[in-house]
Length: 243
Image (cartoon, rainbow, N blue to C red; front, side, top):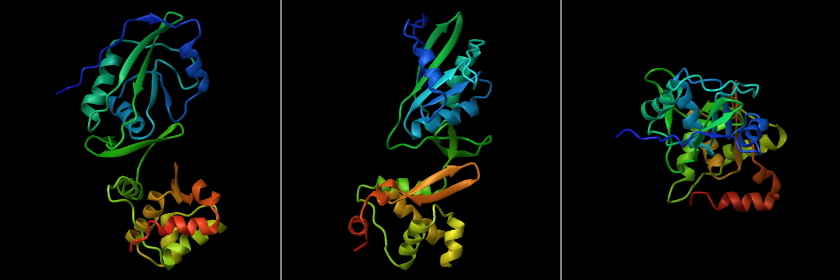
């Protein structure tokens, strides 16, 4: 059944400049600006990314540079509804507040973080993928991220193996800032599936971070790993090793 999204009463921005303060933050992991809504599929990707990450706010009627252009028509609100109800799976819930600043309307779309459920949105017409929000960008996740998510949220806990290939990865990252999955495969002569499982296991237990870039995903040691002594790291890892 379609969700019903009610718009709150039209109101002017309070004296303390709520929207102005949001805009002053610039776009970041929990804030995005949209000049307008002319593509429900594109907006759906942002809704899904917010819901899958830390939640966030979407300001519609605000340009990328932070200047207020205002919402152009009622149609934008209905396209926003369509983005959620038709182009996110499952549908991403949201609240909408409408503000008037200098006689221009801005829609504040508030999306909660939703734990335990992943939301997909279309890359193309019928190709739905999982999106997350990293800084001020939306990224599709890879199979390493999906496995790590599944294992991290498993009721039985996360368990890994800890042999030569696993030790190689950690040793390498102590010397080098990052590695790609393909380079890891090449250096260890293991297949992609095995490398994927090893990296995902370390991501799931918090020893390795995923760094999303426009050119692909890099893997680095986590802050948690670097702050521990060698003895503490080994103890932490061994709590997750398959018996």
